Image (cartoon, rainbow, N blue to C red; front, side):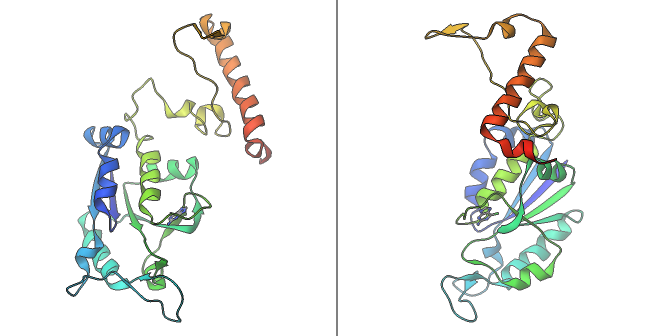
Length: 231
Ligand code: 6GU
């Protein structure tokens, strides 16, 4: 069982996604547990401020260290020591390989930022795995945390069922981890003049596997030649 602790100012936003589709099924199967924590609950004063103006001036607000330190110290002893993920556009790029790495952990704590960023002492307080989901700026870490959670829980044993294997998908191990997926077809055999390729109707499993690999290579060469370049 993998336990996620997600620290966020918008737990309802995160919850809404985790209670749908695969992330929900993963929890119902007991493959994963989600624990959401609002670090505003650990802020002091009538306004429970979690942010403040930056030293040195400049635009925007910075997340204060105290509520986050208190929240983390409250959450840490609830189970074994977690792998700690800081969601930031400055982190290492998230890939299928990183998802596989995370899927092997027993516990993951993710801290979602808002505003211009975290007080640097939050970074210094713990050993963080800083992760970014791509070269663009989101308003907060929540959508990134959800992207990562979805990509990880679908890799956990039993979550997708025996038939729908994550190995065969784009970037999955079955295509060598470096190809995007081949085209899929279902009934009807002809739709608006477009036919399902004969080989897929043939029942020749060897020929079908060969065709799919060719198609995956062709598609990758056309759309993502960068994936074929490295290595
Ligand atoms: Cl992890 N956070 C934010 N705020 N923006 C991002 C991101 C994370 N990854 C890409 N853009």
